[in-house]
Amino acid sequence: MATTALAAPRSPYARQKITRSNFELYSWMFMRVSGVILIALIFAHLFVNLMVGEGVKAIDFGFVAGKWASPFWQIWDLLMLWLAMIHGTNGVRTIINDYAERDGTRLVLKLLLYVAFTIVVVLGTLVIFTFDPCPADAPAELLASFCTA
Amino acid sequence: MPSAPAGTLYRGHEGMWSWVAHRVTGVLIFFFLLVHVLDTALVRVSPEAYNAVIGTYQTPIMGLGEAGLVAAIVYHAFNGIRIILVDFWTKGPKYQRVMLWVVVGGTVVTMAGFLPRHLMNVFGGGH
Image 1: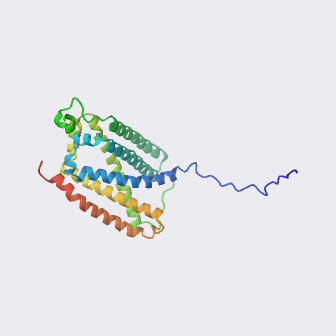
Image 2: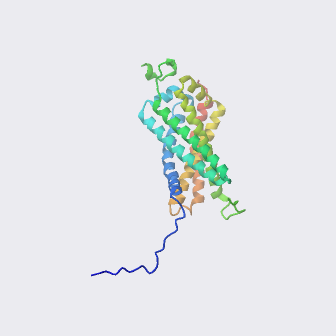
Image 3: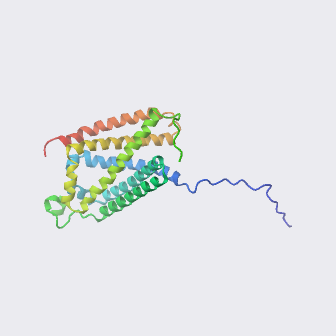
């Protein structure tokens, strides 16, 4: 039996696509998700570095070496670096979009922002993973106690 | 891009000022973060270079700056939770004003816990 194809009475309604992507939605969501994680990461970071023991007075090369000798603090600081840098860069991007009215100004400011982001994230990541807690040529009294023990 | 209109309904009051403070503290924290990664990167140069720079963080003036930085972070964190509640909690918009005072109170209480300890470390003797 031959079926008769019926044409649609009128062409279906096609919603006009007014944006190219959902980028701003994901960016908005990222700020909230990363914000919650950063509260835990940064509050613990501040407590361990500023409240415990002699606080800021106790921070020196040996203190950093003691923390980064453990993968726990390496991963902690790496997560903090990446999340905080993306969260902060995205926040400043929003502020530039809000206040820089000329196209050229917005472009230059955001370019500067992304260059700073790249340098700081790459440098910070390299430092965390290539750090030597016991450099051979350094005076022993500046190093953590586990270097000489 | 057209300029903003001269006045809108929501201007002023707790809603706007908490938003302004969130932006100001956010930018402040971001610029400190850039500097903080650079100073920490000095551990890769030499113990002497790192200790020299971190030593400047232990002076009284920088100690007061750290107190301000921590206050900015605590406010930004607590107000961030308030923003999330306004966005996702059904009653968030209704209680946004009350929640701002909870944020301010929480910041004051947290700083009351942090400041004595930090100022003792910075200004106290024994070194």
